[in-house]
Image 1 (cartoon, rainbow, N blue to C red):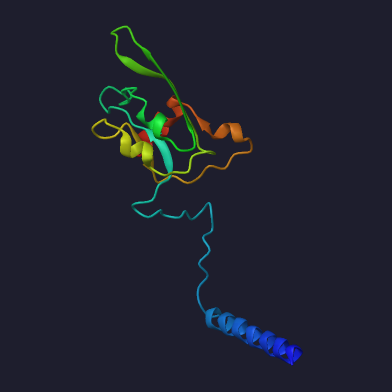
Image 2 (cartoon, rainbow, N blue to C red; image 1 turned 60 degrees about the vertical axis):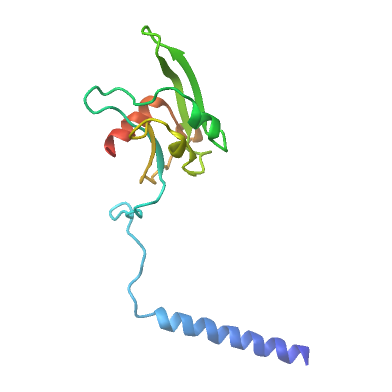
Length: 149
């Protein structure tokens, strides 16, 4: 009895699979021809972490408060601040390991700077051969951020 039940179950599942195959047979494929065609990310998606700059002075908006560094759940942000000649705190080291980042957006939410000094932008291409290339320093983060201002 169990053997007959197993055979009927297998035939039923085979027919279900064939029905799905026939249903989608005449439709257009949904595959994109990457890199010629690129996927447009949804409006509220989170992609790459970047630092923003002031458009007129080209200086980072970051005030070196360190809140993004402290709230990062994966410790993907490496941060060290120092004081400049004017006695103002600036970020000496600001690295983001995109291999560790989970793109939660907490760093962006905690940033106290008006207009946000750290943002997540719709960028999803991170292909590299060496994982150390996934660690972006503040210059590279600012350069990517200029593309999305």
